[in-house]
Image (cartoon, rainbow, N blue to C red; front, side, top):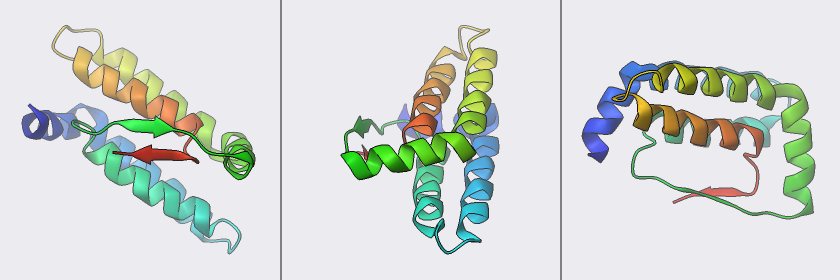
Length: 119
């Protein structure tokens, strides 16, 4: 299911979400201060392209909390809303529910990307 799910996922909005994460990562990397945030965006873009079979574990400390606050203010809300909208659109049909759930997983990750591990 993982390989087939990832192939269909690219058609059901996964490729568009990946492009969004890559674009945000490039914008963050333009500034020297934003390079660590941009690199995290590139890592998450890989998860967004192939989400089936991968889980996200949340954790972190004070540094992660501060970076997540900065992230939410500048980039997190638009990416989370994009994934939330795509998830709702996918959940209209019964066949699209697994893809909608993946979009919801990515929406949560879009709000708290720092301190999280993909495994």
